[in-house]
Length: 75
Image (cartoon, rainbow, N blue to C red; front, top):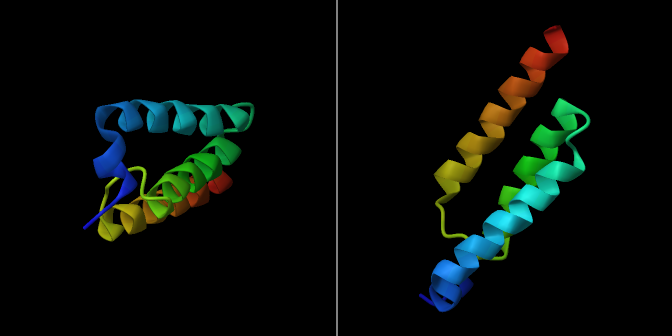
């Protein structure tokens, strides 16, 4: 199966990490916003097929983010 991750290789992994860090830094002043942006960044990279992770990992990441946001709301 063809994907961008196979074509760009290790260089693409490096650029995707930079892209993800940039997205997370946008929400750095508020931790809840950083969690939302990090999930958005991973889902965006996964949807563009830049990173090759399974849908179970994406679903787990979303579930963990929801649990963290609920825990932060109670504080």
